[in-house]
Length: 164
Image 1 (cartoon, rainbow, N blue to C red):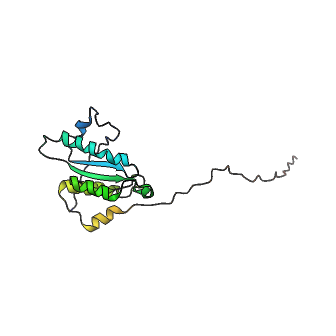
Image 2: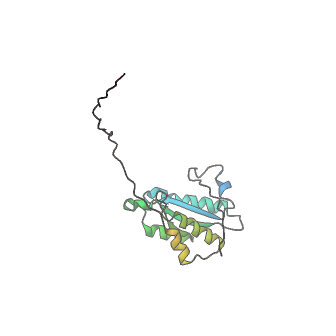
Image 3: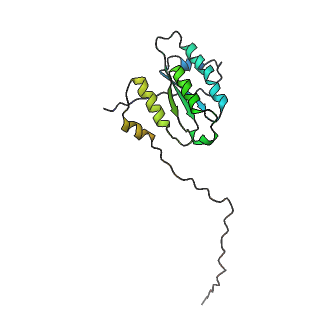
């Protein structure tokens, strides 16, 4: 059967690691997505620090959150600086689930959240559910010329008025 799930998502990426409120967001979370930019090696290197904060905040907790590693900007694959094997190795070393998405195009974003939610709930997704989640509606973006539109001016018409 179907199971409806509500996710409460907090984006703390703009916060500094030493931020006063960060532990309030992390403590008690059932799932944590560590997201980095595949075109920015430093964003990947920073993940170690972020994960250390997660571990520190939850060290006395009875349950540990499921942690997922998410490589973002796969629409910029040609600019990738973080190799896939480096991503996979970090996942294996820390028992993370592995995801690649494009927030810009929406590619695999829903699938990522669906898989993380299913993992938290201990639900095995079937092939049809996984394939359905991968579909992305795509449309061509048409860039129209920014040149001013010139209009042809109709020649003045002659008109005649007669008063009787």
